[in-house]
Structures are given as structure tokens and as C-alpha cells.
Image (cartoon, rainbow, N blue to C red):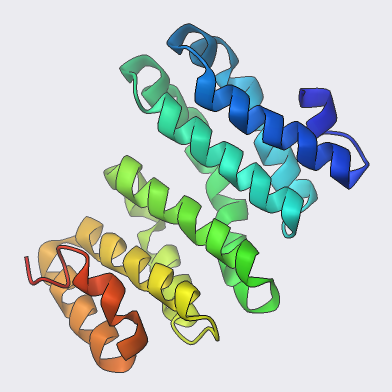
Length: 194
């Protein structure tokens, strides 16, 4: 599976990463603990080798699966936060910065991974909050309403990590400037004023 994910042939790489995601979703705690480093490195190599396209989308999905599974247990949670967050945030943030030039599917998968990180890792992302905020503010001008809504949701969560006062200010800013993104804010605690 990992050999397939590293293959030069893109369809083979895509298949390997799809298998990796399925393996991660069905893995036991012991298997996740034993394999999470190899799996994370495999997904990271794929994202770095193909920052956009179908391979990148499935690699980010595998990373999301690994993040969700690893954070279920304290022993693997620490490993992910300490060992991998600093490795996968740079390509993820670079993907957000280049979102205007990539397909909507790439941008949405990047934003989905950012949203998962913001929901699951909370304070661990505080050092990246300003960069995430800047990228998401630019995405509020994206031609896709789905991208705008996900960017607004990221902004709401980023603001919450930075403090409740900033969250309410950011919610008002986004709602005033981008009505199409207001739905994402309305679904969050920030948009509700709480």
C-alpha cells in the first residue's frame, strides 16, 4: 500500500492513498500507534509531490482520517500534535495561499483539513492562526460559494482560538462584507453571538 502511494504513476499513487485512508479508518488502536508515523509520512510525501489534483485530495483525506483516529487516544494524540503538526501545516497553508489557481475540489479538501485541525487541535494551531486567517480572508472572494462558506467557517474557528472578543468582531466583519459566507457563521457559535 505505501509502495503504491509512492509510485510514479499517478493512478497507482491515488489507489495506494485510497487504500491507506481505508486502512486508517479501520485500524485498531494498537495498529494506529504502531503505524501512524509511517502513514503520516506517506500522506505528507504525496501532498508535497502532488500539491494539487486528485492525488492531493485523497492524500489530504488520508491525513484527515489519521488525524481523527490518532486523536482518539492520548498516547497517539501527543505524537500527532508534537511530531506532525509542524510538518503538515506548511504544505497545507501553501495550498490555501495558492487556492485561487487550483481547482475547487483541491481548495475544498484543503479547507476541510484546516477545519478538522481547528476543531480537533484547538490551541495547538494558535501559532498558525494569523496565517490561516489571512488565507481564509482572501478566499472570501473566491468564485465558489462552497469555498467562501468553508473559509468563513475557518475564520470563525480561528477567531475563537484567538479569543471571544476577536471572534465576535471577525463574525461581524465577515457577515458585513460577504453575505454569501454568513450561513457558515450562522451555524457557528460565533455567528450566534455566543
